[in-house]
Image (tube, rainbow, N blue to C red; front, side, top):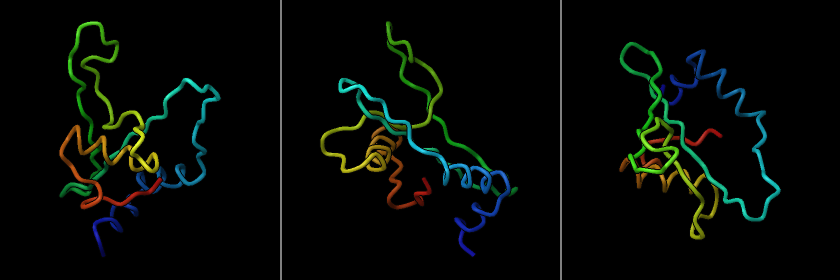
Amino acid sequence: MTSFDALRREPRVAKLLAELEVHAAVEVDDPSARRAAVAILIRLVESSEPEIFFIQRAIYEGDPWSGQIAFPGGREEDDDSSLADTAIRETFEETAIDLRECAELVG
């Protein structure tokens, strides 16, 4: 059994995955709006409890999100081929975690 299999069987994670399967992305009908994506990183620790990874945003005066806790992610760039690529790129830029090497995309 892989660690991904164990994670998928954890009841709270299984419930989240089921919700993601039926969730439709929210699209805004505003040509000036920029698309964005985040990554929700979950792992099982030795106690078989799921952990969720957060970042703390940088602190900048005048920034309304300054210092807040968040999922890694950000705005789509022209070179991103999908929102999944946006989340992967942004996660690497913010944390040096390469999701292509150590993660499984689930939604």
